[in-house]
Length: 404
Ligand code: CTP
Image (tube, rainbow, N blue to C red; front, side):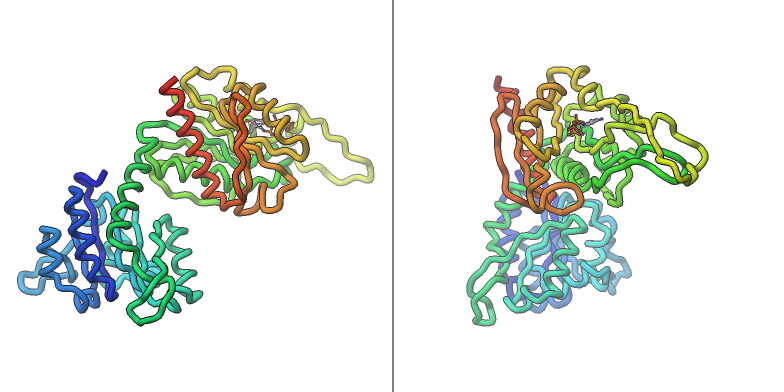
């Protein structure tokens, strides 16, 4: 899995830097091409000569080579790599990465890197559990960086606790697993509808719903991180997603969402209908503001197209279609009915009465129902983790189909 992979290994000033020598040897043995950047403090713990010998590449430590005036281009390095692994990563380096401080070659390379960045922290237990460190790690996660959690055990300080850099063998296993998963959906084209739709009433009012779009965006990011190319047709949301593998098409109304999704649908391998599409729109969309009177106001609403239902009728057998059902009662029965009415392969059921699940929260609790009515219930999790569960189920379905 690591054969030919180009890896930047960043080593910072921690006693765990000695383990980076084993890590380098293991990576090279797996066939990876390793270029090492050592921070100035890193050099106090392990020598460039050791690392250059093991990696078979010059170790980079400074911006400039003072003797001949040449410089190490962090931009080129960031573009070259398939992954940047920072192991060990000290609290200091993590803090600088989280907060935009770029005062050494490792950090400038981090800020220029276009590849996935994986961080293996190493520090004393009190440093690790300090709110500042935990907040900085959370920030790194929010930038899309991946964290290999430190292990619990004996620390260099003599104390026992969480903070030991994960063992080199485990880091290599983690990387192999990561690259294997990363390519699961490579070459697959995925369409995701997300967010609410706003149905215009007059120039200043609309009919909408509380959908935040978080679930659909999390699914888009999960597919993109595993090699898919994603079209995200999104209603109005307050989320930003910057991923070159995700093309966001912003729409406002159900009609626009229908039009965009329908246009690209035939080219898609997988479609996830995560949007909370308004079922109705005002019959008359007024160009001037409705004025207040003392009378009741009666609005006539007309149905919108059922996008999932319509595309379900147009689908080909090879496509995988996944819907959502948000139900307040008889969840399983209603969801199963939607699955068959809309001709889907799988439906994700959200029960409205479950605490922590639903529209405007960061967590969700789902049940996935398949065509043969098999039901799989999942724990309450972050929407990012729910997205991973959903794409795992889609992958399993595709594997089963290929053997059928
Ligand atoms: N959906 C859609 N277009 C619509 C309405 C729903 O594509 N106009 C999709 C949703 O994205 C979701 C699934 O259909 O994947 C089920 O949505 P839901 O609103 O629960 O179902 P409805 O068929 O609208 O049924 P109801 O609102 O009556 O429960």
